[in-house]
Length: 293
Image 1 (tube, one colour):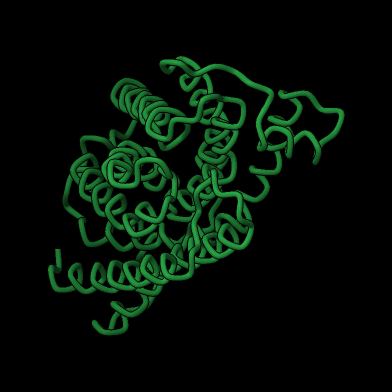
Image 2 (image 1 turned 90 degrees about the vertical axis):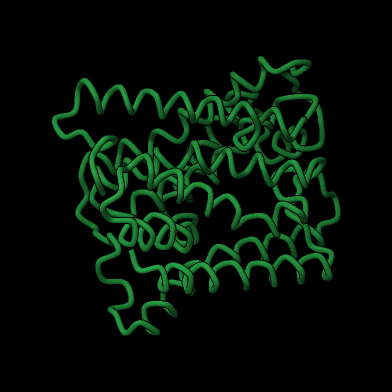
């Protein structure tokens, strides 16, 4: 582990992110799903999308400063294997599970009313709720493996690429805990601007860390199994594209309880962690969870 490199890449990742958060606040932008002002939402979207590229730039600058190949050795490979397909298709399954758990949360219930639902029905007339879910999932799968994957790669090359290389020698679970905390805390300027937790921005910072802690073992496991950080980018991008389904038909909206970044999402992702651990322990020929990176 090169502590100077780690400090450098984290500095380049966190400081610009704090600047983005400040600018976003000054410009009145927000990524809150409850925001009705289209200008504020567009501004927030642009800041949010741009922020995803900051870790990539942090890695590039750090590699240049330490006179190392910019992206070589960070797990970039396009040799497709079955883990690419499993990881990609797992995200809609996770989202449907999150929807189910969200409906089990105190006070939550299924609804076909509300601005978001009405807007979806106007865009897809003639389709019932499950038809809308199916179309949204299909479009999410497409965007998840294309444009969303490109932006998600901006983060993944740092968290599941650069950090994996620098944490070589650590056990997968230990590395996942470190990466999960870093990844979660990195989001805090956006969270404080209403991203994901519009009603609880301060508590949302801690919830985001928890969510990243339970999501990281999944992304890291597939990154190692597939041999490519591109797979974690596809999974990350697809999750972002389809996870909105988990709250679309749920009322009332409680940002700490329902949805992919709420308690429901944390529970489901933790369950997937357990399933992967059991698979790795009793089925897989190569045990990754207890081996070194």
